[in-house]
Length: 437
Ligand code: B12
Ligand code: SF4
Image (cartoon, rainbow, N blue to C red; front, side, top):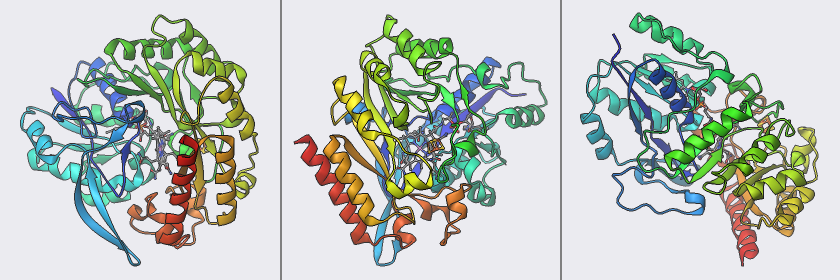
């Protein structure tokens, strides 16, 4: 018999983590499916900055902000010592929440970034203290891309390493000896994620598509979703209306390739939203970079009409563009956005740096160019993802996935010295400061 399931979004242990509209949307999909099967759910999001236990919430751009953090261990790379922190709710608050939970039959835990595994393990250890005999089941991107640390920890009864939920339905039915009456198999049958758990509803996220038709050698998108699927416009509009009704203010799109096939996808979606009675009640953000080549005047105009505030654009330096065989007119993309009134603060250019074949000169050259074009530079430090081609080709590999951390790998691998990294960070800060002045 199954009476109640506890769903948990775990802690993050990292050198630096920031809440950039970070929500456990995968877990909320799961919650929605279980609820439709009549199963009662308890939900704890340890990364919810808006949790009612916090008396003061400091928000920055688009209601993003710093997590509560506490010091944990230190690690040393060469001469440099790094302080790790645990990000999320204070542990005593987590423990208080756990004390109030009764009669659960299973715990479902999610995972996001591979090198955040320490936070997932710590969460599982605390859960085990309170529920030593309840199975803990793990899923999510972290488990899909690198299950190694989870499997050897002995903390989990099952680790799912596919984004497809069919394996989970089978496991669940077998474990509880029941038949789930609702188990959507195809992505077009998925219900909306269950956002009701959040009491203070400020930021939310949405996915209008899954996967990406491209195959960049450093990216894990194809490994997580070995298909490309765009949801019907009607379903997305319904989900947006539901988020507005619940009172959310800022909505981030989590798509990998939102502008692909734009005439059948983003254009009809935004045209309909621009006419919707709710248009203007929420602010939209695109923190996961868009493909610059697909932006045109019509889309730029629709972004403005639909109240987009953040438009992040994926960009590479010369040698990376050549290797990935992609060339596009970034100048034109920025110009089109500026013509609609978007400013340097709205336009973010993610520049991937630290790839083994990339020269220091070409990075500085590209930063200079972005600055001249009047957009915010956001350096994205290369962090090899297990299972990708670039990870497979690495000369220096680590047994501990923590060293693939985006703040560490470049130093740990010897790609740059700590002084060189500081130099890039200094340029990023200086360029952006000059732009905003
Ligand atoms: C949106 C997004 C972001 C957002 C943040 C949102 C977030 N959640 O972290 C932003 C733009 C801020 C971001 C930033 C970064 N990201 Co990012 N991001 C994504 C993206 C596109 C979606 C992640 C997501 O939430 N998906 C949504 C849900 C639906 O998926 P899901 O949680 O996996 O859930 C499904 C299943 O897994 C399952 N499931 C989930 N939980 C559970 C639990 C159980 C028990 C079960 C059974 C099933 C289950 O149910 C769902 C069914 O569909 C992924 C790429 C991708 N295609 O997934 C990259 C990705 C996760 N990011 C990545 C990277 C590299 C980064 C950065 C480090 C980039 C950089 N160099 O600066 C930063 C740093 C992140 C940070 N916060 O510090 C990498 C991961 C690398 C890694 N080592 O793990 C990915 C895979 C992209 C890539 N390039 O390959 N990211
Ligand atoms: S980096 Fe972007 S374009 Fe390349 S495969 Fe990943 S999501 Fe697609």
